[in-house]
Structures are given as C-alpha cells and as structure tokens.
View 1 (cartoon, rainbow, N blue to C red):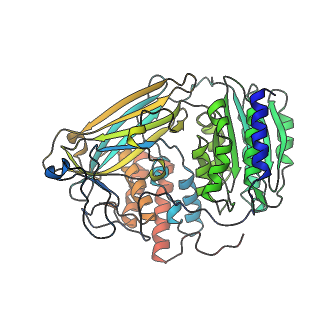
View 2 (tube, rainbow, N blue to C red):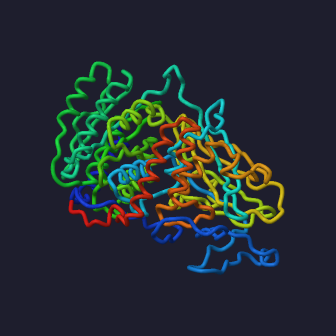
View 3 (cartoon, rainbow, N blue to C red):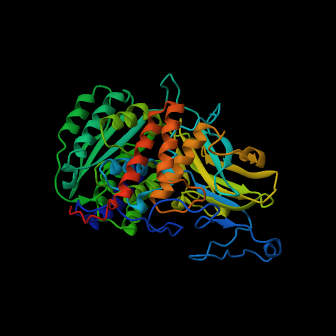
Length: 529
C-alpha cells in the first residue's frame, strides 16, 4: 500500500468511527433543491401560459437597467437573464424513469419529487449524428408546439459508440452491495446477485473486480482480483451474500472507496458500483459528507460511482445525490431482462468514459427569443461564469451515450434568425485536456408543427418530457392530456417499431387510469419498513 493509500485509509477510519448507522427501512427521499416550485396534480396548462420559472426577455427600455420581473398568478417569476444563457452539467441518469415504470406497474403514481424529465427523455434513442472521434457531436432542432407562440428546442449531444471489436481499457470495478434487511424482499438482493452473476460472465480476463457488502458493518468479500482464473472465486463470493440487519451507508461506501483506492489500476477504468434499494434514512447533509470524505479518491485517482437501484420501494433521491457527488450516474433494474440490458447490452457505456466534467451552455438570441425554460436538470444547474472553470464539477459520459436538453421557447412575433447556440465542454478522460464543440439552430428550423411533420424521434422526446412534467405537476405550454399523449405514443411506437416507445405508451395509459381513479402517489401510503 503506498503512502497516499495509507493516508486515505486513515481518513476513512475517522469517517467510519463516526459513521452514520441507519435502519434499512423507510421510503424514498425527497428532493429539496429544485429551482422551481411545482404544485401537485396532472395535466397541462392552457395554451400560451408562461411555464413556471421561465426566463423571459425584459422590454427594450428595461434591458439597459438590468432584469425585469414578470407579473401574474402565483409566485414571482425568475428575473430576466441579461446574458440569455442556460448552463448545466450533463446527466445520463435514467433511474427515475425506470422506477416510475415500476411504480406505475404496481398501480401507483410516482411521487412528484422523484420525477426528473431529463431522465425520462434520456431513456430513449434519439438518432443523433455521432462524432468520428472521441468527444461529442452537437445537434440542435425543434418544432412549434400547440401552444400559441411556443416551440420546443432540442439540444442533442452524442458520443461515439464503443468499438465493435470490444477493445477498451481494462476495468477495475469495486462492487458495493447492500445486504440490509430491506434487501430481503424479492427483486432486491436476489436480483443484485443475478445481475452480478451476469456481469461475471461478460467482463474480460484482464478486468479486475472486488466485492464489498454492508449492513450494520461493511465487509470485504473479495479484494481487487484479476478475473483470469478467478471467476469461480467471484461467483462463490456473490452466492454467499445473504440479507442481514441495518444499513450503515458510511461504512459501505467508505469501505468500497478504500478497496477501489487500494486496487487502483493506472490506465484502467476505475469505478465503484453501488447496488442498493437506497432505503436509508440518511439526509442530504449526511450524503454529502460521505462523498466529501472520499473526494480525494475521485479527484486524485479518477474513481467514479455507478448506482444501480433495485426494489419496489427505492430511495431514488439518495442514490442520485451519491452518484452526482461521485462523478457518476444511476440506473434502475426491476427484473432480469433489465439487468441483462444494463450489464450486457450497455456494459461499455458503464465501464468506459468518453468525457469527464462535461457541461453544456446554451446561448439564446434576445432578438428572436422572448422566453425560455430548460425542462428538467434543476439539480444539475451550473453558474454561467463557471462553464469554462474546469475545477467545477460536470458530468461523466460513456461511449454510445446521448444527452438531450429540451427547452420550451417562446419566439418573438415575426422574428427570424438565430434562435440558440449550444456549446458542450468536456475534459479528455486521460489527459484532462479541455475540448469544446458547438451547434446552432435558426428560426426556420423550429417553425414546423411538432405533431405534423416533425421527426418521430423529436416527437417521442416531446411525449416523454410532457409526460414527466405532468407527473410532477408542471405547467408546460402545449402539454396534451394524458389520454392524447398515450395515443400519440402508440402511433409513434408503430412508426418507430421501438418497444421502448410501446412501453412508454403503456405507462401513460396506466397513469391516466390511476389519475382518474384518484390513486395516491407512492410514498404517501405510510409504508412501514
């Protein structure tokens, strides 16, 4: 063990000495850092209504004096943005969408604060052009919605897919598995074990794996081990996992990062993979503290965190906060088919990196744009001035990923010309050298009708975004009723022959039926852990 690893172990000892011990039961966490206050309920607004939290243009005589404030019903609107900039860290999470699908299938509406539109949108294929090399290709398009004066503008970012030859850097993966009492429910620890078994068959001989479990205490079941000649040892360690009692989040994550540091491989993809239902009564402050204590592993060793959620009750907010702080992403699996999708079909995207600390900045042209609102990404916002500050955390993106940012945009009457310019900035995973790529869109490219002539993939994106915003009680202009959304999704599923769109249509139909039956959102039944 080198000096830095010994220092790191000492720091972790202090963390574990004051570790956070919590019971393994309870409901999903609550998002508290949303930038927009949204009421509960479903359904879209009347056409032309300003979306909650939308940035708007000040009249010309007021622009020189700074921002103006819109007036209207409800709370005061956000001040106008003189720079007309929107900046955020990239996010490839999809766990919120997967959990919403599971919840609706169980006959309940997802709690509004677990619904993040970007995770719904990013769950679908987009058909963007891919770059020839590493980094990103940038696409910008849009269409007019049914709300008077409003359009949807889609900013699409795509990375190059993994090589068909299977060539990639070796991976050093530390699996941290929650074996607390709540994981005993079918579809939790048993599914985690199945998932790891699938992965054991997919990883290469030159990959390395370690296994840590945690309940009241953390235990290393397998130190970092090359898979060549040791797959049986890994499978035996997986099979021996059984549910125990309470959940010590600090001990589990802390031990996992300790193993990842000690087993760090230069030139490899070093990643911690956390499999859990995340049902720990750990608040926001504690979650931050856990990751802050192991921040040097992220910064000095380049170790990232991948969160895999399981269970009919799932602490989505806690898992997302952990992975955001750990430079990673989340997904959710409800069955073996989804486990195979994550650990087989999408394996390269989860063990490789194309970009570190990636951020996007969209500059709207005040001559053509009156108002705009980024749909989602509330907890990924970045100060405009920090866009080119590479010490400010961004998002990590793997091969074959797409990232979509959808904006509701109100154009000025009769305006023509540039609508928006989108720039993505990222660091090369190996050299840390910054790179940028840019794309733009004109008024003529967003003037067609969304539901009559726009591309099918843009329509799917719109349906997913409108659905998510309805579930969280939003008020996006032009949002169709759930029944109409479901019908459009059915037609799009037929046009695209995409089973994922078919499942989206089913979800919307389920939400429509549940809403009409006045079912309570999950998280409001007063479950007992």
